[in-house]
Image (cartoon, helix red, strand yellow):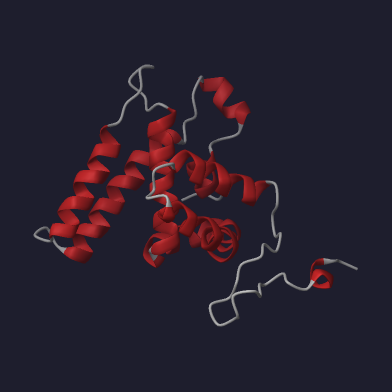
Length: 172
């Protein structure tokens, strides 16, 4: 996998690349990633598992989503596939390790700063807005890289957070 491939899968190719082809070529690779996730789940849970069968049905439905333009996935389908990849990066270390060699900085940022904050909100809303999940993750990683969001540590009191000290975020 080439450097920057995770970023292109999650957030799209540069507009200059899209304009030359008329669409984002990174979208074509999302189906392969979702198929690989299905196979990882099959290996982990087995074909007979009810949980696997349900996941396979749901992921298959997302793979079957198409748009009206040239048989390519529309925005909703792309958001679903990107949301699946973000969720897998957050919850499955094996999926994350696949991208570590080429996209370690983005992966670390997503795993330590962005997904611990955004992921629970996505789950609290029953995963109904993958487009918002992807857009928020993209915004946080591109517009506010390294920003110390107020994420409470599990062992800390409820009122404390990583950025509770206003002086800690001021750079000299």
